[in-house]
Length: 419
Ligand SMILES: Nc1ncnc2c1ncn2[C@@H]1O[C@H](COP(=O)(O)OP(=O)(O)O)[C@@H](O)[C@H]1O
Ligand SMILES: Nc1ccn([C@H]2C[C@H](O)[C@@H](COP(=O)(O)OP(=O)(O)O)O2)c(=O)n1
Image (cartoon, rainbow, N blue to C red; front, top):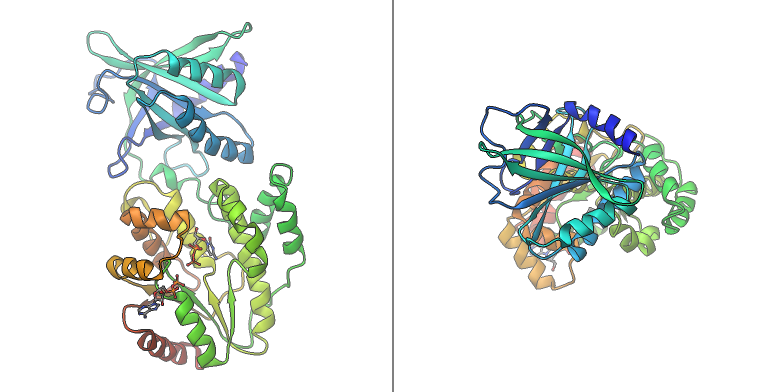
């Protein structure tokens, strides 16, 4: 065990640590070195003589890592003293895709031994690395101490490194692991995730069985397929219903009705599993679209844009500017997913959207509650919507009356789909 950790530590010289002290500003970036730095101290402005710790998941298994990381926050919040602040942390190789290892950084103002007891317990029983941080010496330099288990179950410090400032990377670390963690670009990649979950989430089996029976869709449909996108309460249900009637079309949605019994279950899972579920929903809907578009135009309430935009906006921490640049491969359309003829995104000011949410007065999903609390997240979802390509979405002003929105959309459809 100690040997494995040592060799792992050796690799850390190419890694940078990022701690999110404040979601509205850049993380604090630091690296490990054997010698101290002459540059200003990394934590000087954000830590006031507090004990600090970090922990991150040590597992090569993607599913295990995702499950454990999600559960870890709950466990820490429950067991640590209330004076302990839990911050998000990641360790990554700058600008290298798929290099992120997620963890937490703890600021402990409790001055009690409870924190070390909880962390020691975690180290003994769970797949985690634990480090403590100390500030010492005349020049108040920070150092990182990696904990290890001894044979007889005690915790000891295995190795000590100096904490030195690191450059801000070009790509925010939260953008490095989007592909195949948050967004899946082929049926197979999403399917594999659920397959690997069958033992831990029995419901996966039922979902996979449904997916196995899905209809296969041709690339080209006989009738146009029009997708309506937008945040909750922008008027998608209202518009899709009136459009369906006006065009004599068929109305479908993603995720499709047949997945409803499992949606709430997968909504409680970490992003890797939850997003794979929604990705598969799109392939099920694609099968239905292919079938229905032989007879009539098809209107679809949410599809790939929703899956990718919410996933990207959730995954990317901090500011709007942290989103991958327009044109990035993360905004690409999966090569094996039926492409609609037209995608329209309903856009509304936050005031009007809030008003409509209140008028509707229904229960909101947790994510929608978060949207309300988090203006930044809402902006990131809309921005990601607008960057997705193949087809890109056309933004529609959803603030006029329902009939005016319908007329405006009918005009667009006539112009773009020759209906
Ligand atoms: N153009 C509109 N003008 C005013 N209110 C609208 C308009 N479209 C929808 N609404 C109302 O706003 C609320 C949300 O609309 P809904 O169609 O359910 O949105 P979504 O399906 O996008 O969540 C509903 O109460 C609906 O009656
Ligand atoms: N095709 C879809 C549809 C929804 N999702 C996800 C994205 C968000 O997490 C939620 C939004 O769904 P929600 O139920 O809040 O939306 P509506 O009530 O349908 O407007 O579902 C998805 O990933 N792919």
